[in-house]
Image (cartoon, chains in turn yellow, orange):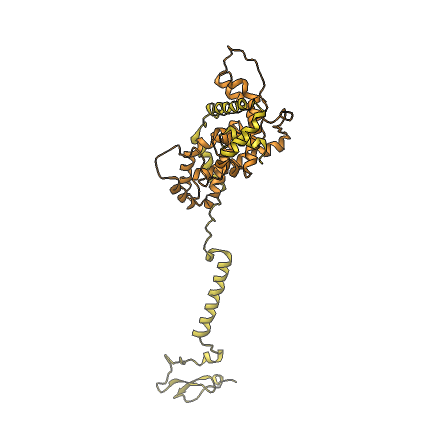
Length: 169
Length: 213
């Protein structure tokens, strides 16, 4: 059985029907003032509905504006677009390292490692461009000896070589 | 009591929007769910007056009603992704606004240390007995609309948050018991009990007003 308060409320609102209504009204026989109470409660409801107290919303456009601002403030901002990795410090460091590696590889693969001694064995031998002598029989030529790694200046037609021109060891 | 069975339609009165033209609510909701804040702005324009009035009826303060309506709409925006269209948009919004309002009223009650006792003066009243005071009214006294509103505001402010919400939902918003129970998260019996005491108190506080006019 429902408490009296619940049944009374349902009775006021006209929600009690059938057997429930009959039984409750039987209970109310002991309370002759109940009908007046019900009418009074209904009068109160009518009064409240007839006197809406809410004032109109002031500045409705500002209401929207403020709300939009709050929405914007609380919506997470899109993550700032990062600079390409290449332009960052680590990116530049990696790029530098890469360039250095490529340079080394190119150096190793395209420039053969030539020992300093081999560099002297160039195909460009010494050549006599001009000679000057009193005797027209004098000729000069050069000979390169790879074994000795030496270029010899060969003079022909000389009668003798003065002692002070002799090659010194 | 047959009419007290849950109503599956789950509707809240006053669903018709302020602005009847334009895309329907569900279309706007779909756009909101895609992140379109302007669509939500349109929904706010449709329901802001209704939401504000509903909240004002609970809190009886214009600034509080404004702030709570803002909070409610903001919460709705944040939760709009969860709206599945099982009820109308306004029903869904109404529930959010109501929860925000009830939470605020409860918080104020705790912070202010105010103890609402709706049963003050009702303890020694026999069930069914007349509880409204017999007051002699000056027959020539005419109460202005402003005074009436003030009296209603004062009377409703004296109710506890739960009783206030119940009476406003029932008498002003016109909700059924099942809808009130669903919104408040309590049983039908609790709703009817709250209505009983809220009415008794309001009758005691306002009888002189509504009998005069």
